[in-house]
Structure formats: C-alpha cells, structure tokens
Image (cartoon, rainbow, N blue to C red; front, side, top):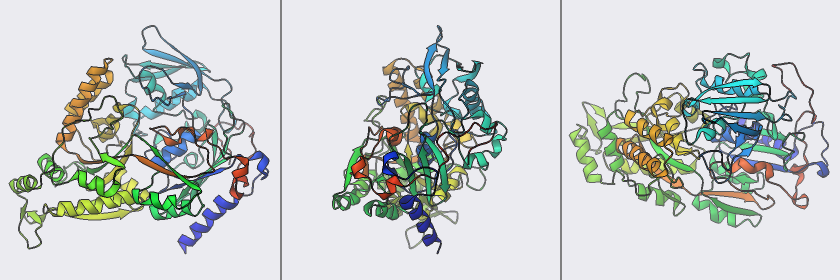
Length: 570
C-alpha cells in the first residue's frame, strides 16, 4: 500500500504538476527535467551536505561567489566565472581577496544578498557546534570581514596555490537572515532546512521524502532565467525502479548506467547514452573504530596487517571486469587519474591469496572448523559489509567480494540498506565495513576531508572509517601548499603510497560514468566534478515537449515581496 501511495504521489508530481499561480501554456514553459535517482538527499544545507543528491540540489538553489571553469583549474583564479561576486581584487601580499557582491543579486525571498551573508557562511561553517564536513577544507581561511554591504574580504593564514579555489568552491553562500537565529546544533531539523532559500537560478518548491524533490525556475534571477522551467528528482527505492522510469518515459535522465543496461537503453530509439570521465572512485571502507564504542579500535580492522591481508586476498582486477566490463579501471587509491598530481603507476598491495592466508595465520586467525572459516580465541573472523540497495553496482561488488574473502577463510555478511539508512549509518560510524563511491572535487587536496585526521575527528566529517595517520596528513598539507607542480606531484605520491600501504580501504574502481537521457534534452557540458553544473543551460525544444513540460510548478508568484528577517516564502 505504501509503495502504491508513493507511486501515485510521484505520478501526480512528475506528469500532472501541481495547481499553482502560473499559466500552464507551452509559451511560458521551458520544459521539465525529471531525473531518476536512487535516494533522498541527506540535507539541503550547503555546509552540511554529504550526499551526491544533496550536492546536486543545493547547487541549483544556492550560488557561490564564483564558479570553477570547465577546465577545473584550481590554481589562482584563472578560468573562474563570476557569480554572486561580479569582480574581485587581490591584496599586494596575496593574503586577502576582496569580493564585490553583485548589487542585483537577491535571495529567493526578495532580500538582497549582502557581504554579511558571506561572512556568516564562513563563520558558521567554522563553528564546531555545527560540525560541518567542509571545515577541514577551509582551514587556510582565517576570517571574512564586511567593510561595507557589497564587499566581503577573505583573510588567509598563508599564501597558497589554491587560495581562490578554497574561498569560492567549497561553500555556496547562505542567507544570514534565515539562519542566524537558529542554534547550529538544530539546523538539520529546522524548518529552514525543509524550505531552503537560495540565490541561484532555481528556487525550492517541495521535498516529499522517498518520492521527489521539485525546483522551479527563478524567472527574475540576477543571472537570468534558466532554460528549463522545472527540475524534479524522482526518488526510486532501488536502481531497477530508477532505470524502469527512464525506459518508460517517466523520467528523462539517469546519471549512471550499468554496463548490462546499455544494450537495453539502445532498444529505445528515443533514448541516448553518453560517457563522462567523472571524478569518481569506489572502495570498500573499513571502520577502524569500534562501531559501538568509538574510543576503542575495531576488533578486526584496528589491525593494519589484517587489513593488508584482506586487500591481498582481493583480486581487484577481476572484480572490476565482472562489474564494469570495460567501463572502469581498478582504483589507484583515494585519487583519480585525471589529477595531474596522480602517478598512474602507484604501487599497490598485490593480489596474493596464499600470502594473505599466511598473514592471517600469523595473526592467530586460523581455520579450525569444517566450513574453512577462521577464528581466534573463539571469535570468528566475520564482519558485516553494508551497501545501499539502490546501487546494483555496489551490491554486485559486495557479493563478489564476499566470495573472494570466503576463499581466505573470512565470513562476510552483506547488508543491503535503504540509501538514507546507509548514509546515516556511515555518518554515525555505526558499521563494520561499507562500499562507498566518492565524487571527489577538482582539487586533490579534498582528500583531507575524506581520508585525513580532520575529517575523522569532526562530528560531521566525511572520513567515516576514522583513518588517521599524521604522516599522510603532513604529505597532503605540504603538497597543497606547494607552488611547484613537480613538488606537488611528488608529495601527493608520498601521501598516496602511505595510505595505500596502511589499507584503510580496498580501492575498487574508477568508473567511466555512462549516463542515459531522453533525446529531447539538449545537454550542455557535463563537468567532470559535477555533471549537473550546467543544467540551467540545458533545454528542450518547443516541438519536443510533452505534457509534463507544460505543467506549472507549485511555486509562488515570480516576484515575491521582501519579508522580515527570518521569514521565508512557503
């Protein structure tokens, strides 16, 4: 019954639209983009978002001071495109950057964007009571001052090759008047989190958990109206449902096809596929801390030699071929080959099952039962491997890994979870091992948040496995601070070699993203770090539109009145 109710809600939202104040004629509609996705966003607060779905949606609602160019240059300000800031000035010593706010920029509730919003965004992100996962990525930013309403000055601790990138890429700007009266610890559960007010080209309309998220074009946006009038993320309970919605025409786009799905999509002449070399890698992450008592090491994965043995017992090449065929390469570590700082010949822990068995024997984990499973002091060598059931690829990896480790005498219990439950389990560090997939940033320095000590110790850090090594941290920090490309690459290589040998994860795959979409969509550039970055430039020709394209969004009138501080449009 629940499933039928969700289906009816989605059908009403995607196909019929909702009764609103705008005309439903084709003349004032640029069309609707319906995206198949495998789970709800975790949160729609830029400084707290950790899921890909959350990043996609918040990037459409909120603007940055400037946006990175398609070249993904992270050094100095070359290629960055003005957004909330229409221009900026570097100080003579390069220890500060003054951003001038575009005077026409407004929040979706009608109030103007001001420099105090910029100052508030950085200050609140640094507040330990908020526990933002972005904190570790903006450590070089000392503070932001607001000498006047249209000037925000970033002050840095030290000169760095990616000062500008750190200032603008990591955080979209948030409205101070909406959030300042809410205690940071209560942001996630607040009404403001459920009705976000941004400044970008799409405004929030609604979020029906487990059904859909809807955004509508901000037709009076300071950057101009986007070409598409409505965006809908259609939330599926599993990958098969998400794919079925694309094949049936219920949605227009899916961001990741499995290799076996490509021939099925080809049977539908109205559908297309496209490859995108995204900045993604997948891995089996070990939790190095006890899931029940985080002050203690994990009874299994707290041992470095054991983690190395499990990696040695894994034939990663065979796994990748079985799951992706030719649409992925074995992952090198917590990095991607697209980075100029990545050595494609990074030494790996080799597949060597006999040696893995010897190491396990030497650690006291011996085969003592007829089922060839290992134990030590009466405790079986057994753990639970968590995966989101919405990702068939990760489920496949889990099943294959379960069999490979069984040959080493290790029992793996595969736990398939709904995506929100999986995310929450990761966030609380309440797992043994989990198969994750990370869409990383244009800067290799992002590894500090996902694998560094700061990301481990922060309450909302992204280092869910709690891997900590000061040697790794030092190499990364030195690499990020270096202005010399050869030195940066050498230091990152040392960092990667350190973490690979520590084996906090089994590095699985670096996939080539294969998207599926309806031919009526005219796509713009798919950026490697965020395929969705140019959605405002996507379009649907008038003669290709279907009934849902002309359904009005459930939105307020295009020009809302300014409201008192802290109030938002419905």
